[in-house]
Image 1 (cartoon, one colour):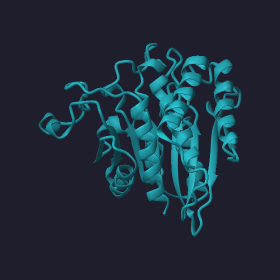
Image 2 (tube, one colour; image 1 turned 60 degrees about the vertical axis):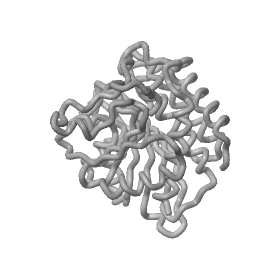
Image 3 (cartoon, helix red, strand yellow; image 1 turned 90 degrees about the vertical axis):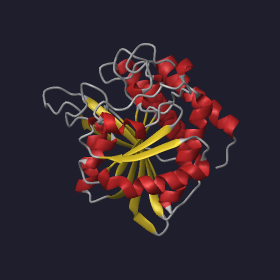
Length: 300
């Protein structure tokens, strides 16, 4: 599907306004908001003629306490390498005290718009789009994350996920020198390698995902003028394991985190001030176009 930048930006604004403005904090402990969140994502995909599948699991893992979590999945089967899968995903939940515009309504908005742009595109590989539950505390790294459940289930099915792209906070940008911080676990002698202006999207992989990072970069640059900072780092740099990409690394799948770098840039991270008006929708549009271009490259 072909959409102009103005339409994409308008759609992104609407998604963030609904998720972070109208609905607000989104967590399993807030059933009054998590239900409408799931309903909104499903409704959007169904309006694009996607068949929406639901993956439900017990996030607590206690037979005496029901805490059902839901991943939503849509898929476009590839033409000649359908067993190979490129997965684009984003978590839709928040911590309970923030409306979560950047974290992570921005990413869900981009997920929806990339899937809209590619709704009639058929590559050789299969495209899978997933809205994940339970990335945030108290589920993070407790084998309760929606991405952990999906990655483990995929491994048990022997799914050939040849690339996973994790959208994690993609809406906050700044141009001032000093607006971008360096991850604390990076040795100070290497700080010169990292940008100091928060005006770029980062594509971050572990060392085993460097080929995916290279191919992603080539596709992204064909679709977008937004600066892209690509890097592969050892997982000892703990900041690169703080989202759903780590669930796929743990199962041996190559994965990238696509991010505005979260707390290294955005002062509203996990605060009540993470509101829709703080985001840069023009540059989010460039993120959308770049990720769509990269998906086309990876799906060939």
